[in-house]
Image (cartoon, rainbow, N blue to C red; front, side, top):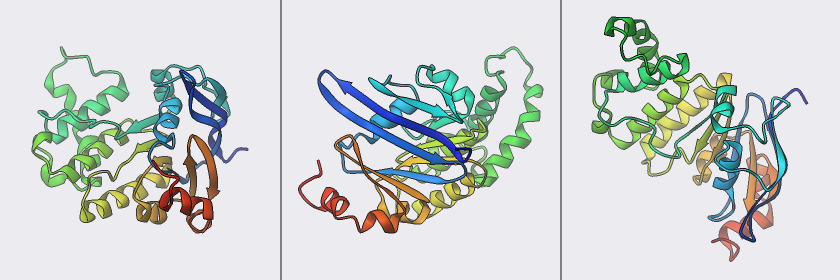
Length: 250
């Protein structure tokens, strides 16, 4: 299907006899926000690690824009346009906000190691960097060291450095983790804006954020897909309620 950007077919991952992900078939439509949710231990992070090639699957296939990327290396997948953010803080703490974004722009251009170039040659990147910084609401922090930023603003900087890589597909790993109410609203708005011209797959525990942002939701439990659909559809599924509220979580 032409509207599918990322698809998994029977994706399975075993660790020494333990099946972390079992027969997961996932389809992310182009230009949508797709959430992957489930209780702790459901296999969400393992799925992300398989998609971004930090792990190799035991069985199954991964297709990106119809191309089989199951055996591709992590760097090659990133080059194709799949960029993952938030699994760790993706910024350099003792560089300024502008320097962090500029480095990400240089990385995309393949010039990050041209240290012998004069500083003036980097001026051309400043305009693009500053536009990204303004877009994520950090203009007043342009020259601040990343380490000095409040936690929620660091998340905004991570979004800016991720967008600097110009991904076609954005994988967000718990973007709201540790954020307060005001920061959640701000980061949600940034994700919605970023999704206007790209596809987003996110793992997120905050169900109000999932309800607010997601076009489609896949619920995982014990490594398998429990159900998929809109938030309204999955929220009334008795098995989902049991997985979250009953004895089935952990």
